[in-house]
Image (cartoon, rainbow, N blue to C red; front, side, top):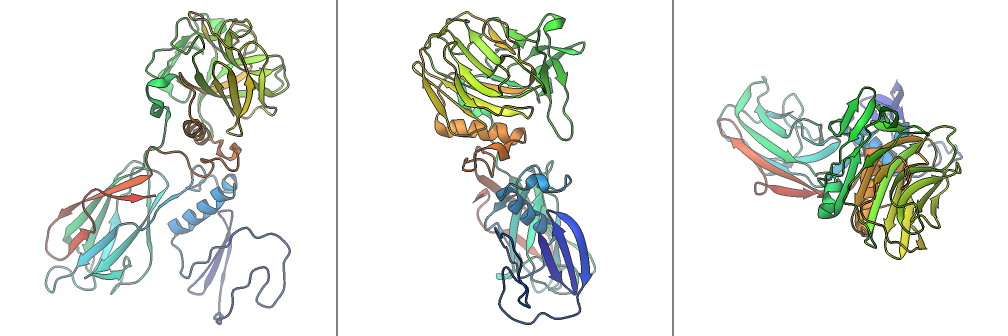
Length: 464
């Protein structure tokens, strides 16, 4: 709930939706702020989770950033309007921000009545920079139109596609001074599986259309993005899964049927023998699906010789297997895409579901080399997956807890599943990033009127 009172007008928003406004005629008298009751003492029943009070009117970008912060913190982002800038990703704040110094000489094209205008935005979506200003070394915030300087906060919403902020000095007649300052913005870079390095062994991503080869209506090749060349193929038309293109509300996927859809790598470089590996997948089950179904399997269909991710017999239980006793990691694998993670070691099998706590089980594993890698079936090439597969990432190592959580966060945020992560998951609120730094550098164009300067050396870094 958002309410704002300014210049005789009250406006209200509920979960980011505008629901009304009203003119105000009375002035508010000083007094305490009351929570849980009106000023006349009338009480209300319910729960209060968080209250934010700001002693000035917010700009639209600031209001939406505040709504986004609250929505993502309390798991309400799906309740925001579909057009809200923070429905699909949370806002991030650059604390402190740069200080812009405006030195106004006694003579020149601009006067003490000059003001700044902002032009340009920046590379990364949903970043918000708080920019502070000072005139002749006196702290002042960005000026509005009209005579003189006013004191209000400037939050600059950075949008995709551009990477500069330009500051121009103008006089009250709207004439732009020759001086201007260009601030180049380098935003943080989101984490992706390339950070796993040389251990990255397989990366199949249905949202990457360049990795999909279509023959007729089916997928004949799904190319490996890991750089290891572990492409999987389906030569026979009857074995080819269907390609389901993305939409404004979902990314693309491959749809596997229950009877014949399978993609195979006849040779591959995934870990064999007793060597450890980590495998994560995102998949969903078709409505009404039944029977044993495998997202992935390789090795041999014999005790201790296979490595598999599967759903058990229509029970909606996500399981991992070395083709012996199975490890169940969750029992609510339904039609919604879900993340299943597995870490295979020589003596212990670990697994989890949607980034929640890991389960473990003692196992004996010795996967034979030279066997097929099957996507959409078990190691023996049967018990086909019935549903959609979105992405599979495998590493030839037992990932650390930190790297496993980053991979879970990457998958969850990419596929809109972040609210399914455990409430204490490190990346439930924000996605993982290669760096938590936003770099700013400035290019100054000299001219008469004003001198503009970004405080700090070029390349100054502001930590998010």
